[in-house]
Length: 91
Length: 429
Picture (spheres, rainbow over the protein chains, first blue to last red):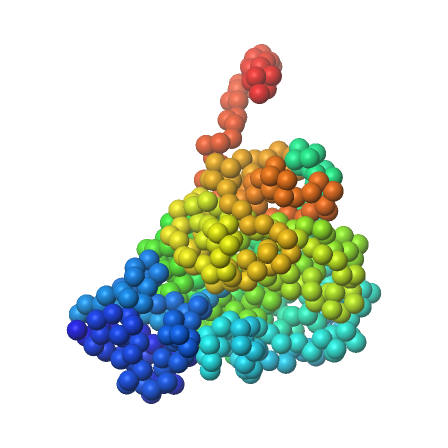
């Protein structure tokens, strides 16, 4: 169940400057744990103490915000693309 | 322009900002091109100033002696050297007696950024600051994700500054906004998706291209430009604060920066402190902040926009939680209105005050009306409504809701007949 994850620049210091990673995970929660296993400390950046994604981070599965899906329980399947994007201003 | 640039230079005693700081956890960063708290919590970064230095340097008199642009407030803005001065800012604050009477208010003002320079929206303020800083940080290409107005402004000011420009918009924008970008000859990417999808793409582009994205890696500097909408209103009210402001909410950034502008002038002794209520306006078709406010939440549930108010159609507003906090702590409100009410708002402002605004302004006027009707704005309050864009950019929104010309022959008889028709139509109301 390989999923491609796009890593934002601020997190690439954890991933040896890699901008993407291929990870086996069946849900967004599992993906966060898998990333943390490979890049220790990453989960502490993505999530608060209770394991909830930080409120200024957006996570998308195949371009869809996971808040329109099942949040961190959102299921992943082979070939999915996951983007982690810090919130930005705009207009 | 030369005159104002020279004046700005001669009165500038060096930068007053010292770095960046996370708005959530307070972690400090060097003042480079970064926008999130990458070492700790991913909160947004804000510019840190030396307010003692500003206070020692600035007075009402020094500001009044400055150029008639946002750069009269340059000591409060995060730039190091000469600004890119395209005459941005110092737009009219109109006493709106006719609209006030219609709504039942005693003291209403319109801050009209629909005539801002160079591209007729408040975005010229933020872009003037962002591109000045972009140049200082060594960027040669600038970019943005935009609902239209920001694209216009970035493309125009980049052209003036000689910077390369590539901007991203949703592909369904109004023709006026597309044309008003292309005329400056940037590279324009019309993305098949809504603004939030455009923004996500741009975040990924920003990761791999070394560009200055005004609303992404330059965001801390960019957003500071909106403070000038606070400063100007204070100065134009004769160095006084209003009692109540109403402003449109898209990402929520403008709202928070008007508050910051008021706070900074209070902090530096330029205006007497008093409570100001902050009320925000959204379209019902994109109302994540209004919904959270109504439900008493401090977090935002994103929505997928579906409204004619495209310029404020941000379904996932980054500064939404801060906007809610300001409305709550100041005793203000956040309300939403339908597309039909937005069109009526545009027409009402035009017919009563001679100001033709775009859909965001229609939203603001419609919410102003709604809050007055609900008793949430006291008629005695000195109220300022922020009009942030120009109606000529979104003519599609009103084309079916306004009258038609009488086409006549160049003969008096033809005019007489048409005039009778017109008067009959007017009598019917």
